[in-house]
Picture (cartoon, rainbow, N blue to C red):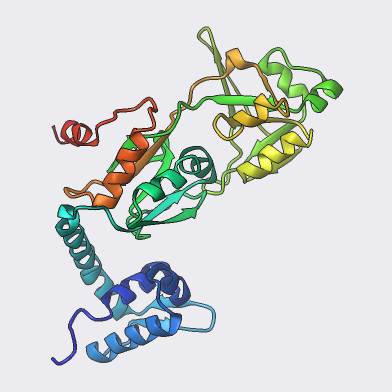
Length: 313
């Protein structure tokens, strides 16, 4: 066979998983026409059509489904092998792809990106801000950042970022008009700003705890949104009381634009973790990034190698 037997495999697998030639082109840093040509070349070589194509959708043929089942895992192993070979490189390099929710970007990534990119000039970072619980392996990400209790059990998860607690906040203008709640039950008489995560579609409940007493409120209100920035802005605009987390709102509290309520009722939360597939080899770029996060003196194990030894033991 004159043509390289592996030519077009990465393009095929990426299109198959994303169900889109344009999305695959973005993922692979190629033009859509180049991705399409690579797949057509592969189809000619195999002698079968791998995709059903219409102007609105892309789906696998029966032959394409069978081919993906065979070559998908093999391509993943080849990628892992290439990453393992690169572990001896003197300097971390390459593109680091991360999938994070907006809160993780604002609280964990935004404060450190400038310094990290200056320290590691050979590493580029591609961040996808995504509220859904993405499959980072299928999506081709090196790692994701989520709250620890939302991460699949088959992932390695390393705690990062500051300690996280629930913050009940409202603007001074709102409190002047409607009064300050003294007990969580008082919130039932207030205008609440609710949060509905995209990944669940369910309005988040508000949890409280003090001296062994636990309360859970439904969290529904006159305004509901699925975006952290919008939730914060609504509180600033005096539309009601919000249930947020510390980190990105600390400056607003110091400036007096928001006031914290029921502080002694606010429980600690699971906190952010960076997570990735449980593999023997971790790419230098990812290892450097995790070690850098740990160096921020956040309350978490600071030695990644020790963490791996503990996991393997």
